[in-house]
Amino acid sequence: MSRLANKVALITGGASGIGAAVVRRFVAEGAQVVFMDRDDTSGSALAQQTGASYRHGDVACEKDWQSLMAEIGERHGRLDVLVNNAGIVSNRAIADMDLESWEKVLGVNLTGTMLGCRAGIEAMRNNPEGPGGSIINTASTVSFLGLANDAAYTASKAGVVGLTRSVATWCAGKGLNIRCNSLHPGPTLTAILQAHIEQDPAMADKFRAMTPGNRMGSVEEIANLALYLASDESSFSTGAQFVADGGLVNAHPSMD
Image (cartoon, rainbow, N blue to C red; front, side, top):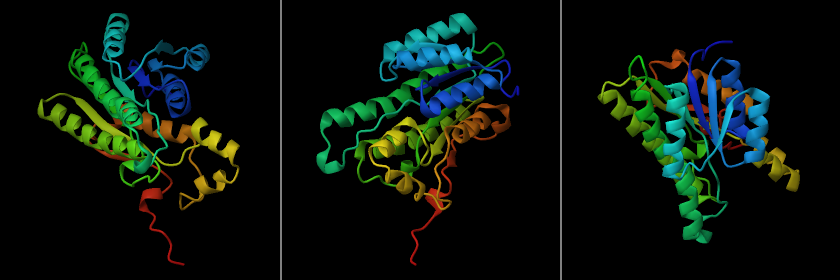
């Protein structure tokens, strides 16, 4: 259990859901983990449980990134892994989309990921043994398929794919040993989906039916893929889309 030994990892949106599972998995694999979120109650509790370091911050705020990266540099002197995981939804179709909701979702999901990539590259370029590291951008299956009832979320997650490709290509072209890949979870039993199920128990069957195997994924399964991308085992992978969705994006609707 030491696939991330001697590595420093930063995870955004790490206080709950997939982010919290990634925090736990990375700590278990020997990483020194810092995670950022705006949920101080959950963040502080997770830090106590795991030994990871929690910091309050907004990924859409440039100053928050600057202060966090300065602290990581001073405390650890390096950054090896960055998981841009923070994300929000609007639950608004295009006909109901207002500009404030659109800009809020794009600000967190896409601008926040851009700010993270930029800050992460700067830190990874200055690692003691030379430039190197892994950036993992959490996208979604809606990066490939349109979600009718959330135009902003769909657009933002499609944008994450383009950003990831650009970052990966730029780093490779500059001769930096910094790779950047996107992670695409399918229907995963997080607090968001659980809340929908509690409001309407029939939603559980609908979520399961999204995949050919008729089940939802667990946050631990998504964290396992993030671990691979964070580890040196994925050293030849960059600019790629890694899907953990139970086969959702490969399943054509049945004609039976």
